[in-house]
Length: 394
Image 1 (cartoon, rainbow, N blue to C red):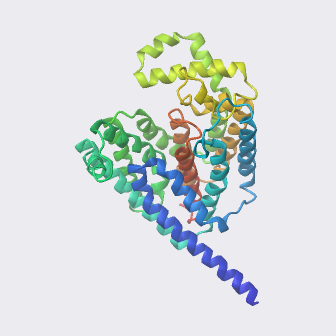
Image 2: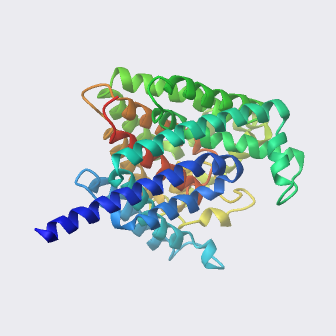
Image 3: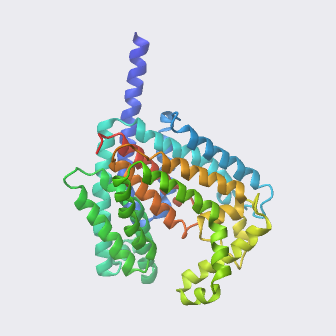
């Protein structure tokens, strides 16, 4: 009897601990998203480390967990033939992935394990914090980054153009998470806080020349409404689209290059987009030489000057480095994750999560697939999905 009471008390203590850790993390999301997006990898890792006793893999989680573990093993094997050899542990991608997978999973588990009242408080803190983030972005748009420049004076002076670029970069953080962040607000305030977040993203992205967040502001509401209207069909359709995206990307780029005037298209686009098309063209040429196994983890770094760091296209980078095996693994992961959002009834959490996942896939044409902060943002989307899913149906 006493042993049972002790176990119950221990579980309750863990729930309270996880709840307070989530509240602390919620306080930090907005300032990190604005001032230091790279810090998300440390934030999610810290949450996971502090909440390691909460780690669980449920029956529903098992397919995604198995796919992620298989992908990690294949990535590790691919390092044996990769031409990239890290010079120090901080550059060792497979080492970082080996730590990130359990720590980020632990952070997501903490959202499920947390005390319900504290979890609700954490979601509310996040909602108001992200609304304030949106207001700050509006202010930065009007003043051309005055607050960001002012804060930098205290620790590192920064050029005005770089400050504005960093402000624009931060719109990709809020532009990714705002549907799930707004969902944590009290019902009567939810649409207004969502509007403030979206307005901040749109204003700053257009002012500082970032197109992807603007496209995300169009895509997210469309996906949300589609999942809300067709809660069973749309997530399954999105799962198919995501899988096809990863499996067919090299063929799509090849077709565009073969059947259009690719060079004319490149010269008609802004410089950053033209450079990206050049990376993609070089990537498919390398993929054709080793389509099954790929060139190995982080091999993209060795294909300069045609490719600088990575192809700036998540599916192409997976193909280039991990081959068809890696692409099938990524397609399976996204297929499982998105299809699990299917419901027989309309559900706001499922709709918001699908919206965020769609934007994550859209933004994937800007970043390297293994960037720590980018993977951490993906884990944050999963954490917010789990946290909101534990609340009463909305």
